[in-house]
Image (cartoon, rainbow, N blue to C red; front, side):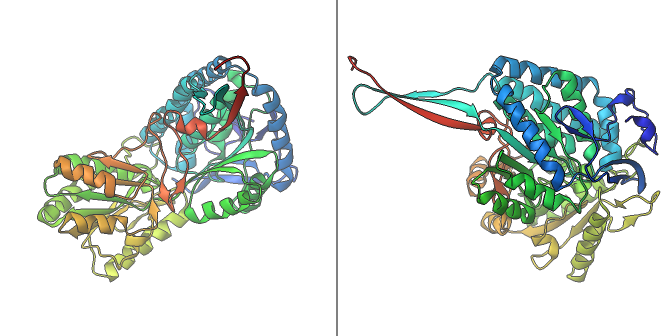
Length: 500
């Protein structure tokens, strides 16, 4: 293990961070099959590392290791768990430059965005180090005399985290920090595109002092992902599953967990609407929309997909948005000056191109962008804005997951709300207006788990994160609610003698 194994020199300050084996029970191991798979740099379509292709036969050892570790880790005091998370947090921040560079080559995002992800990710280790000591039970006055009723919270057991490729460090830490704070152990299956960042976290967790088996990583290929994930979901010793990904896969995993009634958190697709009213501050709305849409080339579940603009300011807003979008600089994530990198997977290019072609076929106007970018063989697409969008277009009903947004005109608030809610998904919605009455109506009437009110940022460690409808259930981050996903509530009823 080490940077020498990479065909692209990552120029890490600490080469020992580069880990290319699975991590189970405190050991760096190969798959039982001996097979490995390639990791590709999206910015150049070049192989730069390989990882073990873990499969179903590798799952049982990891789960049993996590279960055995749980018997010990569950006895750690809240202060001890908080101290471990604090040490983990400090190590992540100490090595943020190297972590960011690994992210650039795994995901394709620009270095500045990769650094931002590390800061965002570390906010969870910091937050949950505090939450570990805020776990508390309750007492209740009893209806019958001589009785006392109280509750305690206890960790569930082994948790499995199935993590996407778009924010691989942040998504691991958002799940793992809550689990570790609660006293659970974890088995993580990172995305096939981004296993190295998760393995680096395992190395830092080991350095922080986590006991063997508490934190385990199983990298695998896309081909083995369904069967390995199913094995984790159906394993009798796994008591909790947390998944971030598509609605289609979330429903499959939900079915896998149903037979054993596993506790499940699902953070699924978005197709998020963004509403701009006549009285909005257009610069504020535009400055919020640009990063919300084009961060990581539009590959975020909370990205704005459908932008509804009131007709009175439609042309002005479209012109302002297109001008600001043209300032985005596309390039390899490691290159200075790049503000938008490559898409992580080549399939993303096909989907964006298909949506642009469909929109043009149905009468849309491309204000800027609309084409692939030939650059070093990477997976690049121009940041694209289309006008005159209509409900007939694919972009109105399909989550894009790419650097394309569409502008839909509307006349009334009721019309905008109806259009925004006309989707099976309900992760996040955004609205911009200076009318406080309208703002409150929108907060109540938009069908989403998170509403940005004159804000394009709905995600923070202290803020509950999660959707409704086909965007899933359960909460990640936030006070009490996130850590409760990894806890059971046990009720005690005591009958006293000689007392009222």
